[in-house]
Amino acid sequence: QPAHRPPLQTVPGAVAPLVRVAPRGSARTGCLLGAVGDLFWDPHGQDDAIAFCRRLGDRAEKEACYTSLVARAPDILGDPTAVEAFCAKVEPAYRKRCPQSLGS
Picture 1 (cartoon, one colour):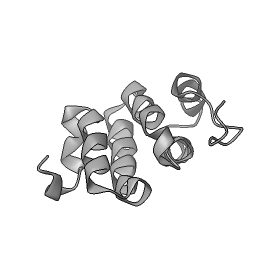
Picture 2 (cartoon, helix red, strand yellow):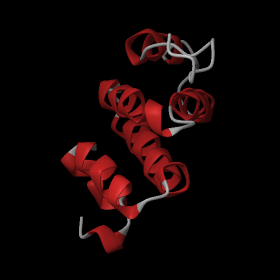
Picture 3 (cartoon, one colour):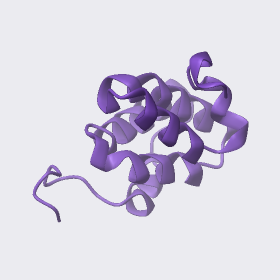
Picture 4 (cartoon, helix red, strand yellow):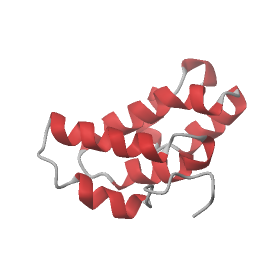
């Protein structure tokens, strides 16, 4: 793994099945938000975090996942151009969560 990633971080495809073990509802949502937060703790994790959200099948869980990502993007990425590029990678149905100033 690259040096900039924490040692326990894993690829999205390996994390998603672990999240599904948590009971549905707030426990599972909390678990997935923790997982996606671990994936997207710096700019290098954005693609893994987006891939994680994309893999979720439950609409409410996917909504929570993307809402969390988009809310964190400005703080993690900083530059509005980087946030705009990030939002372009988000599934179209969830881009509405991107900052209005980006014209999404």
